[in-house]
Amino acid sequence: MAVFTPVTLDDLSQWIKQFPLGKALALKGIASGIENSNFFLTTERGEYVLTIFENLSFEQLPFYVQLMRHLAERGIPVPAPVANDAGELVVALHGKPAAIVSKLDGSSQMDPQPVHCAEVGTILAKMHLAGRDFPLQQPNLRGLDWWVETVPKVLPFLDAETAALLQSELAFQREFAAGPTYAELERGPVHADLFRNNVMFVGERLSGCFDFYFAGWDTWLFDLAVTVNDWCIDLDTGRLDEARVVALTRAYHAVRQFTAADHAAWLPMLRAAALRFWLSRLYDYHRPREAEMLTPHDPTHFERVLRERIARGAPNLTA
Ligand SMILES: Nc1ncnc2c1ncn2[C@@H]1O[C@H](COP(=O)(O)OP(=O)(O)OP(=O)(O)O)[C@@H](O)[C@H]1O
Ligand SMILES: N[C@@H](CCO)C(=O)O
Image 1 (cartoon, protein in one colour):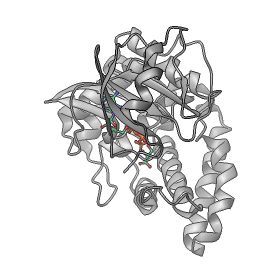
Image 2 (tube, helix red, strand yellow):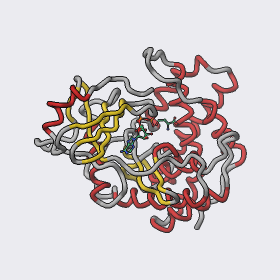
Image 3 (cartoon, protein in one colour):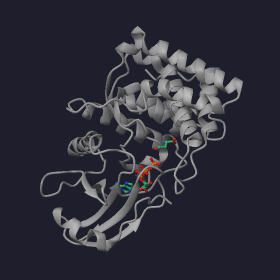
């Protein structure tokens, strides 16, 4: 379960008074998720989600919660943070940063079809465009610098062939990121973790996306690659399903047209997106963890995805 910091209704009775939400009526821990403690919170004003941030600091959080507010104000269906009477969106609870956000309708679609992928492509492109005038900047904290720093930490746990793949992919990505095509890619605040479990659907209609806590400044194409590498693949083999790739990328392109640099960078970015999650999963798997932490995600899944992209490439971005 994913409640690392227990909270009771009693704990909230005073604390909630700083928010314009009336009394807290019910509180229920949410079992899924591995990063934060999440609760469904019912108040006199309606249904919300209370998050206690286990790893992010008070300094890092404004970027994420302000981004959610910015996007929500522009009509993107993301959780809207609730400000307290002092206008603050992040407030201490049990000594840790906490926030209350609106609860989204719907449930995850874990067996997506092209129709769902098209919805995701549309919302991703709208999110990118809506982020263009977002004033705060924070790098993607799981970007290239983090990869360079983290690869040596996991190498000792890998056999020689796997270690060689990790090192050669990192070298490839460093070279690509230093080149002219990468420099031309458009960038801005991106979600960077828009997996199936972070999007809600009501039937075939996308009702919202959440979990912005890996968001950061990066290329729009990297965000698209992260999304395609989860939504449009066969989970057993890591292979891309062309019908879903076409549905997602066409819908994206209908809102935000691809550039020549996007076309040229598509395969390298799909590889970068696979490397990013292979590496974070390796790191989570091998680092010493606190007793109550959950079973980590399987790193070999994204190793397979990376090997697939290198061996088989990807369909061209729809023009
Ligand atoms: N605003 C929201 N509206 C409705 N449900 C939400 C909302 N935020 C979170 N949830 C629910 O809580 C669960 C856990 O949230 P979330 O994925 O943000 O946690 P996390 O610990 O950051 O997880 P991870 O990083 O592993 O995805 C989600 O799967 C979803 O069911
Ligand atoms: N989406 C990440 C988990 C963090 O949200 C993964 O699958 O490794």
